[in-house]
Length: 140
Image (cartoon, rainbow, N blue to C red; front, side, top):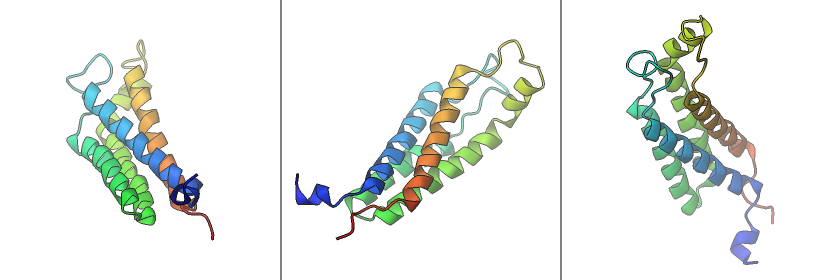
């Protein structure tokens, strides 16, 4: 095992995992264009390019910071970017969630695409939060 890789700790890999989760969430949201449910023209259209930019951009910036060995800043980016994207997503999809809960769309319930994206963005946020507190390098 090389000396450079033996100095990496659990937190280093968590930062990379958080960046990968944010990238996966951003690409998935871009592919589905933020449309959920049967009514993709009104309440089911939750697309916002800022959400995609935060997720994909945050993941790429975090990966670049890891390459530059700025682990603390990279872990902050992996927590903040998905957190802000999650808040924007909740704001953007408020009416879709209300429609499902109030029974307007009760036959169909939540779209599987909605559940998948919500799980991805939530996972990216939680893993990013764990990355903040995890040690990035081993003690000498």
